[in-house]
Each structure stands twice: as structure tokens, then as C-alpha cells.
Image (tube, rainbow, N blue to C red):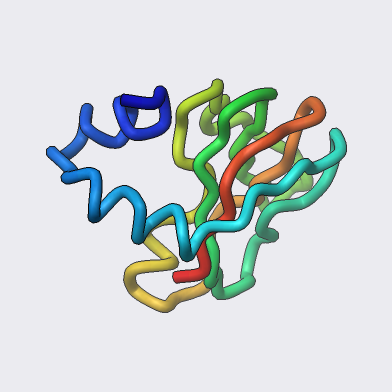
Length: 107
């Protein structure tokens, strides 16, 4: 079993057939450091399974301060999942902190 399949199996058991179908709808991407994945107020339509690099989720306060909400390490799902499921604008900004590699899935 490859490591991506093993990672997904830590959430829910996936057959090889299901994993293969998921692979078919995913696009492998390399993203440079300091690239916005999703900005505050945008309605997300993609989620990323990061396989290398670091990304972060940030909250911008009304007075202009930026707060770190989360740091994502390899084999994490990165993106505004709540906004994605609810089809609502994101309350957080998502940004790559280093060069990242992973799979983009269009929801």
C-alpha cells in the first residue's frame, strides 16, 4: 500500500478501487512558498492533500493583526474544509510557508 493510501486509511478504510478513483480526480501540484491557497472571504472549491512542505491557516483581526490558527505538515489536508462543505466564504487565509507538493481535489 502506498503512503498516500495509508494516510487516507487513517481516517476511513478505502479499497484499492476507491483509492484509484480518488487518484484519478486528483491533480499533483507543486506550489511555491508564500502562495495563497485560499483567502478570507473566498468561497473555496478545492482541498489539498499536502505530501511535502509546510502551510498555515491565518486569521486577520479587525485591527490588522494576523494570528496563526494552524500549521500543516505533510500528509495533512489543507484548505477551508468548513467553507468547502457549506459553500460559504472562508474565515481564514491559507498560505504555503515553504515549497509544497500535494494533490489538489476539486470539490
